[in-house]
Length: 530
Image 1: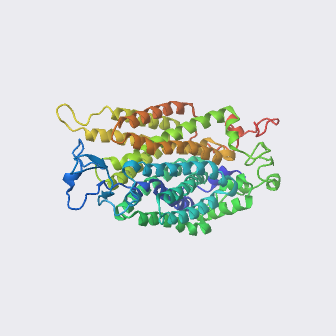
Image 2: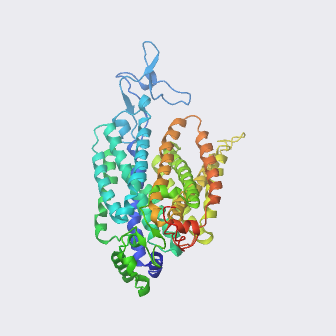
Image 3: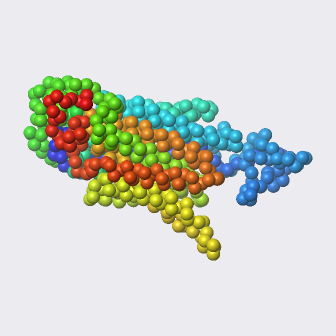
């Protein structure tokens, strides 16, 4: 039984595929909320030292060079000297309550919101590396659902945090689960569509992330209390309880693990929904395949054509030359995409204008970028668009720093800066999405989730770095992130030239297929230890 033949026989975009896609899109959409929710959970409404009774703000709060009140200094009317705030702070009214205002994470502690974001990203990293491979063993469906429910419970507990440490520790565990949920969902989407129509759902699923950002902006606008907002973004996880009854398991995973009866059941159910007839020969399982345990034995003309003698681990990604090269390049690309993408998102509230609107717009602009990306890669493949998007992002990031705010004659060029930045964001969005698609297509089934999970480890290295890059350069040296982002993207575009094209090619199932370029078996003396 061959997974791609089964998927092809079900049709491209029938009722089954559409409903499946919508179900997993909801899972992917809500994944944006734990990641970016900190922008509102820890939002800064503005602050200054608390003004003593019977004194005016203009008398005791110094003014900085920009004409704004100092945030962390207060002046004594008796000595006319400024000292750090000693009686607390007064906050603006943009939020009713955030962790910043509740626990006074300002002045000497102003790094702690960004530290919380970084610790969340550390949780992402450990989750991607340690938990994502569980879906290779236990299946995509139940790993996704069980993690969603556990994460929802932790998210609700987070809303009742009594201090910063409790909040940050619980957020670590939310991140620990969020990345495996997202990665396994993405892999599952890729696996449930045939090679001929894989690009649309694989890239389209990322549109739900942008929609998630838009919803988050709306929720943040109407819910200004951080505890209430945390509850609202956590409870939807439990809506997926109904998925336990009708969300199917991945057909390629079932076949790869020789769960042929379940694979046939899912295939027949999908065929019935799509009003398709699956040729009987497609569902035939040779007796030898049927009797073999997963991961051992010699298969016939079916899923595996090599002798499998061991369990696969992440070390198998480095034991052959081609797969090793692809793996190292993908590690770099995921790091580059992440640090650039999240660096810009975390800096979005610092832009001029309404921060809720800015976050919403940052989500909206991703949707047309991804739609355009879908049509381009479906016509000319993955490799050239990936190179283009990486180079476009890098070049526009660097160009932006050379555009002045005003010309010598006083003409406002802020609009040009924003345009350049948005073109760069377009490139980042396309490159990020294609990196995900490439990872799901370039690695063989036997190590795919190991590869994607480890790639995501490096993605999260970028995510961990992004908040502190934004924090360290806020107010000064604002050009450094743009230069850094631009250089690493251009390097990424160069490295992408050494990747193979994967457009309209069946998903590789074994490491030998990567090395030999066909579905033919490796020589009899070879095995998966090589």
